[in-house]
Amino acid sequence: MSRPRRIGILGGTFDPVHIGHLRAALEVTELMELDELRLIPSARPPHRDTPSSSAQDRLAMVRCAVQDLPLLDVDARELARDKPSYTLDTLESLRAELGAECQLYLLLGWDAFCGLPTWHRWGELLDHCHILVLQRPDADSEAPEALRNLLAGRSVADPQALVGAGGQIAFVWQTPMAISATQIRQLLASGRSVRFLVPDAVLAYITAHGLYRA
Ligand SMILES: Nc1ncnc2c1ncn2[C@@H]1O[C@H](COP(=O)(O)OP(=O)(O)OP(=O)(O)O)[C@@H](O)[C@H]1O
Ligand SMILES: O=C(O)c1ccc[n+]([C@@H]2O[C@H](COP(=O)([O-])O)[C@@H](O)[C@H]2O)c1
Image (cartoon, rainbow, N blue to C red):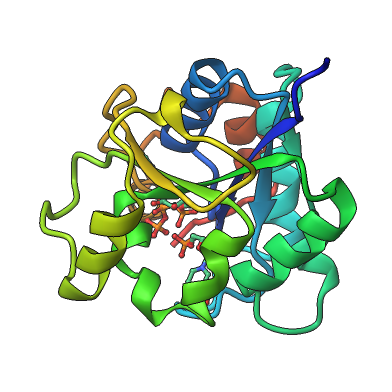
């Protein structure tokens, strides 16, 4: 009997996508033996300032970043929606498309995970997926009070021990990379290089389109 499909999703502003995102995506894909990992650029992030670059540029950079990576893909569904990019809406539409059996893993950096209690209908997210929390070396270490009960009831020590289509949380200790898109925007605005912080194809796109200059 064939096993259910395993799909990972990593949503983000990706302003721009960088090797912190990509290395985490690749390592989780291998660790969890995913069939596919989708990077999902958000159109209008519900919780932060308007991105520096346009949705079209952010999407194009993510496409450049994954072009040679067969299991990494780009899913542009949030850009097609004319409203804030709520993750619950994305999960509902993915579930409707992929079916009830598919094992869905939502990847969240530690900082994003800590903000979960402010998300739209956050209590329903685990009805649709498992959550994999990615270590971020530049982040605080204490989980907010509002997440303690959820962690006590739903977390599993070993990500490979997650069972079923969704409902549980596990932490993934991938290669720590203290890189952020904020740092990359700041370097570019001050005329410094971001080589090796983003894939060469992304750097070529940034240069060709004059993005993030002061
Ligand atoms: N270096 C990293 N290591 C692990 N996870 C990361 C890293 N950078 C970003 N993430 C995670 O990837 C997702 C998308 O991140 P996002 O596009 O906001 O990048 P960012 O670098 O955090 O951007 P910004 O500095 O603009 O806030 C979030 O869940 C975030 O926590
Ligand atoms: O659904 C929400 O209410 C919600 C609130 C904050 C963030 N998110 C999602 O979390 C992901 C990471 O966000 P960010 O700001 O770190 O790029 C991205 O896919 C956002 O759409 C989602």
